[in-house]
Length: 120
Picture 1 (cartoon, one colour):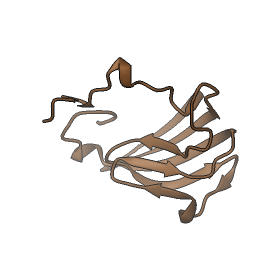
Picture 2 (cartoon, rainbow, N blue to C red; picture 1 turned 90 degrees about the horizontal axis):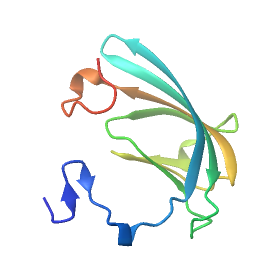
Picture 3 (cartoon, one colour; picture 1 turned 45 degrees about the vertical axis):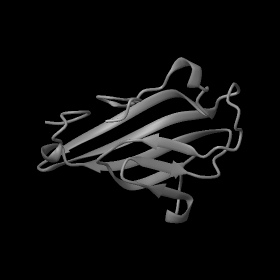
């Protein structure tokens, strides 16, 4: 573990803080528990942060151990070229200044050995 890492990941010092590029005004979650998996649909009202330095930054969401099933902006499904799901990050390029984001992900609570987030 590096000197800048804590038990929950990298430590951000106040001197290194920068305003986030986006603000989330509302979050609505629909959680569907199934045997062996959970499907989570999230609806977020997102807008660019006027205090952020980079006005063209992509939206980057952090969420480990998620399988992205669908991504929509303002009710329009995004094709795979508009977003990039990684192991822990979902990056969506070329987003408007304000938009409704809908994501659908699958998680496997039984495989959650860190006991973080949602599990049953």
